[in-house]
Structure formats: C-alpha cells, structure tokens
Image (cartoon, rainbow, N blue to C red; front, side, top):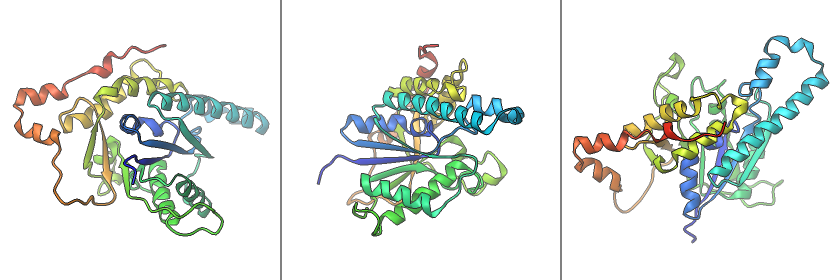
Length: 293
C-alpha cells in the first residue's frame, strides 16, 4: 500500500479552499500527497464586492441580460483569483461546482454529484467544514459539511450510473475557524467544535497572507485586512498550542493504533520554561509580509 495520501477538500466558497487549510495542504503536497479541491458555490452573492454593492440597492436598473453578463464576468474574476491563490500552496486540481449561493440546501442531485467526485478521486482523507456552524441550516459552511458527509455515505455504496468503484473514506477532518470553537452568537451555543488537532503553519504564513490578499473581489486587498485576519485566525489558533500560527481541525472518526501518540511538540510543551513557551507563540511574521498592491 502506498504511503502517499489522496486528499479531497470540499469547501463552501472559492476562498475557503485555501484560507481554512492551505498551509496544511502545502505540507501534504511537499511530502508527496495529492490534493483535489472543490468549491460548492460561486461565492458571488455574499462575497463579491461588485455584485453585492452594485445590486444591493439598484438592481431594478439592470435587465436580466445585463445581470447575467455581470455575474458571468464576476465569476470569471473570482475563480481566477482562487486558482492563483491555490497555486501558491501547490494546489493545481481545483474544481468549481457553480452552485448559486443565494440559498444552499441539501438536494439529492448535489449529493450524487459530489459522491461521483469522491468515487473518481478515491480519497483517503476528506477535509470539509464543521457541519454545525451557527444554526446549521442557513449557513453555507455548515450545509457544505452536511453535504459532504451525505456524499461520503452515498459514495460508499454502489451507483449504477457511475462506472467508478465505491469508495470508503479513511478519515474526515473538519477545518475549523474561530467561530466554530467559541460561541460567537446565541445559536452557536451547544454546537461548538473541539479542535483536537493543530497544524503548525508558521513556515507558510507569508503564503496565507498573500493568498488572502489576492481575493480582491472580496475586498481582502483592503490595507491590513489579510494580515489582520491571519493574525486573528491562525494566530489565535497558534497561541492555544504555543505556535505562532496554526490551522485547527477536528476528526470525525477516532484514530487507532497499538500505542498512544504523543507528539514531539507536546513533549516540548511539557518541558519548556515559561519564556520559551511565550517566545514560541509570539511571532508576528504575518504582519511583515510584503504585498503587491
């Protein structure tokens, strides 16, 4: 059996493919693993500055043909940005399912379509969103997580419309954001995730900042924003485990072995003095990244 992993990332929006787990994916690619990223929606209605600002108050000024043409052009822009950002992490197999992000809800067609991709890719590891984010039903990330779990179940069975073999997933990892691990709104209470695994992405934080900055369609090129969100997101996760920057995950299935795992980092944490602990997590490399305006 090959040691190389096949990884499938299922994201709600184009930028989610890299901003949640790009550093982790780069580490996997560097060790010879393969990565396929899928964006479920176009991310135009809530994440595109032209579409949102142009149509929010004056949509009646535009014909259907004009609206369709603007949406077509904005989708091209957003997808191009996402492809360039993914390329920074070495991700080259990127797919867009083109669903409208006005309303995202589970349908048999969507589940079957994603299950077909799973059967094609035959991933060992699937990475997706926490399926209980916010109220679970209206949140795109949560619905994407639920869609992915449903598609995993479907892909495990035989399809008489798909010539690819059934696929059994070894592990599912939920890529977490700070909202998932702390009750930030009332309807998050009781649905928070426990981040049980952290990946040190300090060595690639410059790519995290630059990739976010590329998403100009989402206003991420506002001065300071890419650096601010990286500090707030990956910096806050890093502090929890005494790294400068980290990406947090929760596993769906319990891992199994003949011994109990204790990482080198956990052993270091137990032995380091207080100054070493604070020095390890106090880096601000993300604020020093040079960006092309």
